[in-house]
Image 1 (tube, rainbow, N blue to C red):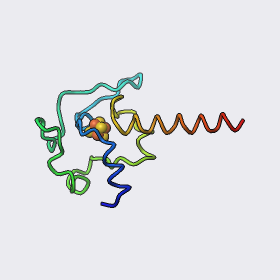
Image 2: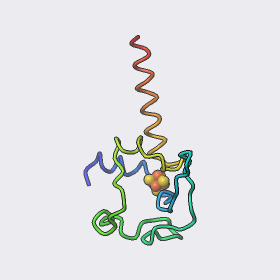
Image 3: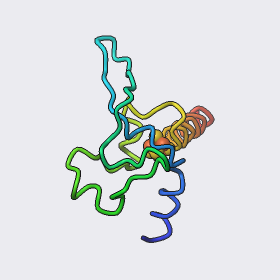
Length: 99
Ligand code: SF4
């Protein structure tokens, strides 16, 4: 893992909340369920197959900088979501200052 990957990885709060099943209702609202991914250790909230998760669990999603802003199902307190929203705000601020 290189340093930028480590920095990216450090943004994750390791809360495991994204590893619970969720549903999207007809209004686009995300409903978080109590059933966790089979690979999540419920006590530590860590993925038991983290290094090989994408290869073992085909439904696992690799979170990238571009992707996190498109995913409506990341919980509001997700470190990636907060970092992404903050970056978006900074970009908007820069654009507004140029006008
Ligand atoms: S919800 Fe966000 S911060 Fe929490 S484990 Fe998932 S990716 Fe990391």
